[in-house]
Image (cartoon, rainbow over all chains, first blue to last red; front, side, top):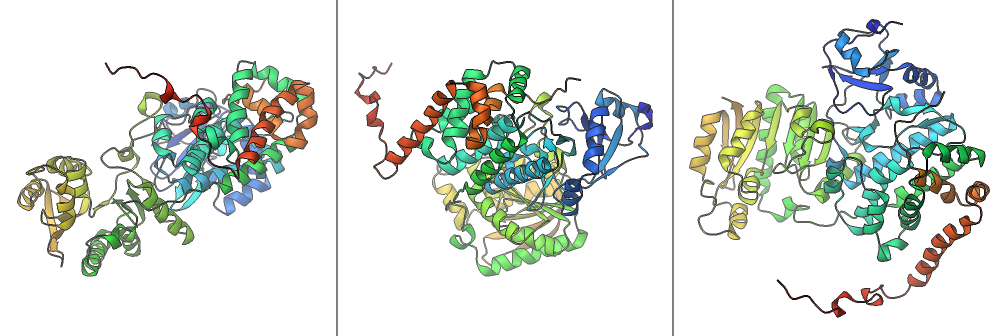
Length: 479
Length: 77
């Protein structure tokens, strides 16, 4: 088949898809395309006729996939694969791309279990998964979906699970750090795209941690084996293992145990300053009701496809937005425990329209990996049609010390409608944030200044002071 | 045809999978490591025994090791 028969139009290469040479992803406005090499196409054909594929497509575990048999446009795009294209697959687009360093502990664990369940099911039908990375998992709200169809390959008898080390580095060790030591895994995951090496994990999980479930074997013995045998030629090891009669049964045993271990890892999202924030703080019920009504009205006006709830806390307004017709809400907050509580609630409810993420707007996810493009910054993954900034601006302005004008410039740069709440300088919460600072600090934080800056950037569609008297809501459109 | 995996599985990590298999992996382990397998398993068992002894007792204190605070402190520069 000639390469030119497979062309995809109006698409761009996904800069994060290049590691697997048999499968390359292109992103279009309505769908995602996957170009497959000869070997990739062979694997795909086998997978497509398996029971496993049918079952996991039916229950939504795998991203929806069909063969784009007529192929499509742009020879440039076809060149992305670097070898003849033998098949093109068409996938649904997930509503919003997110990365493991933006997930909560519960989300990472859920993705880990999904990865292991897929592998166990694959082994039953003589397939394996060629890698084990959380970047192969995305979300429809609180439900994980496995997106890398190219990851399935026929099982090669006598070979161990190639993804085991990667699973440890990107799933197991971060989960253990959080569960056993209470160390936030997100900054570490964000700092290293390949995860935590066994030797590093062994240095962190030491002393009494050695006796925690799984640490001795998956961390310390792993590090020791790596030090001792890491330099051995991989092909030679595979050959020796085959001769020693290594069987897929052994992989099944190991993965089943690993699954049990992961399922038992737990993190108690303890109380932080932000969990129970609503109850503990000065919000009157009347304020809360007015805010929800305000959000509902703003959403109903345009029915935005994508809403960002920035500083979402317990997600009350994200839920209000969905109820009023928003297509999908990305709800983020900087506090891990708060987002974990939200995730658990959404999961309990089977919610597929609200994606909870851990994200600090004062330090948002940057571009990472090869050329800083393998993982994209948050704004490069789809801008919101409506941004909610409720009870947020005083934290950015006073706690993070970002000048009001800069915050508003950034909001304006989204070029979309915004619902914003401004607590005045007299507000008890603002007073509390200011109390630790020197007198006269954050002098730009004044209603008059704020409204002047606002007027220079936005047109104010609606303005409503809340009953408490120290907070004002604005519905803004870019001027 | 030599099928190349794009991901390096790591030689140590591949070999570890034999040891993790417990009873299911014994035959393979003996073929792979011979007598060394007992030494590797001893590492593991030693840890387990310690954990059994350790579990009901008081927390392990740093005092067991040579305490760094006992060393003469360097003068701050």
